[in-house]
Length: 300
Ligand SMILES: C[S@@+](CC[C@H](N)C(=O)[O-])C[C@H]1O[C@@H](n2cnc3c(N)ncnc32)[C@H](O)[C@@H]1O
Image (cartoon, rainbow, N blue to C red):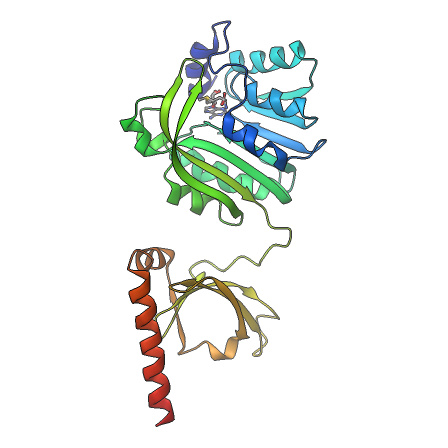
């Protein structure tokens, strides 16, 4: 059995349900995202409280759990309640996510080493069907100061910027690091610092920007994200679809590709993130001033 399986077997070997048999509060508040009969996967399901709650709402539940003790408890809770849950006793290190398969994926306090999360979360993006939802609640590194539950190793806690990057391709419907009281059995016991995520796979996918070409900076200073090409990329009249990111409100533009050389330069995501830490009003004023100066020069 894997290391995760060994660790969690020791915790789950008691007959009691150490996280209780009631669902996680955040999942309960988001369960309406999954219609009856939809096919939903819960990763790191533990002892079955969340999968059983969703199965009770008529959802076809599938659960992955590394620990054999946990997997047996998921099956027992479902049987006690007369429910069907497909239990896969498997380590996420070796699980293969099939593309375009799930109407929903749930991850509640499924804390993995960051190297594994960096593989699992992008796989979930691929594994969701268009329109499908990912619902996650996890502790962030700030939780270490609270001491009310979760791993003590910061590598297994979730930094929002990492999660945002790993979920590239999903629309973030709700994405917030908050303090809230989590009281769920013996190991989650009070005020906590959690990241809550609801992310949806778009019904119509944008073409993925080529590596290194995702973000561009206008010569006046505004930052944009390249979303795709409206017509054949080899066509000199190809239309580029791109979205303003900073410093003004987000909006989408479409312009011929031929207008881009000299007007835009490629920038990295890190450069955009750094720019977004500056004062927004000052940045906006600087862009407008640069534009006005350029226009005045070109008309004189
Ligand atoms: C804190 S418990 C949460 C359990 C459950 N989601 C809940 O909220 O009650 C973390 C769960 O993730 C599972 N887990 C951790 N690493 C895993 C891995 N690599 N593969 C599969 N499951 C894993 C553990 O076995 C454990 O059941």
